[in-house]
Length: 369
Ligand SMILES: *Cc1c(COP(=O)(O)O)cnc(C)c1O
Image (cartoon, rainbow, N blue to C red; front, side):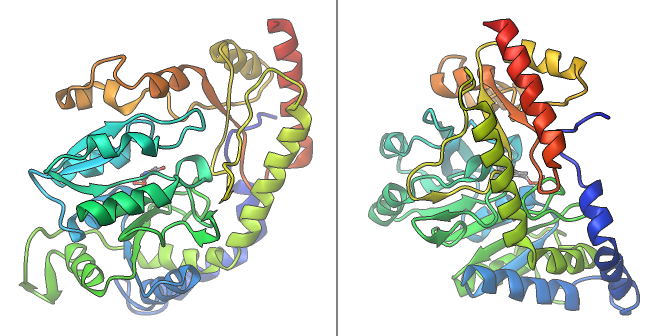
């Protein structure tokens, strides 16, 4: 049997009754849009983070976009972020009319915060750290810069549900934080979903308007921009049930990571490292090897699927050519993109399947050296 890099069917088999109950609850409620499910999920997700406000939206990309707009970002502004991220982070910035400004990352894949100060210009409005792969960017220097220059911080938490940074939950360290509930994420829906959390009441009010055509009241547009970006009721009810299990999902992911660390410690693979102060949630399990393409092909022959997150740094894609970052401008990002690949990682990955991955990798690495 093929071992996939990610899969949800075993999880669905275990949680099927609850998931179907969520669907039935919504279908039988008589209210299909922005009703009890979304409201309850928002309360529960906010409470879990110890913040006052959560606004459910239709996906993570729009969580970033509406989050930026709610923080006052728009045309003419600059947002400092990384190119070493999922492209949607940057698509969302461009979608607000603002200009993304990239800094490089460190060997641990995370934003090199030491480069941010020199990227700040009079147009800078917001810093957008991406808590990549499941662990947090070094926040203290960003918080200090934001305070000094009067900037907002939007955390991209699409890969960091449940992660902590010096004890603080991911998503509680900036002005607002964007989450995705795309199925593969650490907290995943059965379809698309997203949310923005914030401690700021005005930001919350703007988000509610932004996701609802620019309306505060039905049929009356108070202010633009406006979008239709609501979290779906069915996904909200499913997410309420899955949120109760978030700690278990994270614990299972950590156990998978621990087994990889044990089984692959004496190989040439560069394994993920947790930065001191971080509690990693392993959204993906990214490793590194200069001959990554050969390894991926050899494992494919053994019915094991690997993945690359992400094969192209954002600034090198034709869709972002207008931003004017030539090849070579973000050297660490570009080098990492050539060597990284991800091993199968999800909470219900069976230990036997994982052993097969470890064995296959060990064999293939031996033939390469
Ligand atoms: C998944 C992801 C997004 C986009 O979320 P969608 O729900 O797919 O729109 C944004 N940023 C990062 C870092 C992501 O991993």
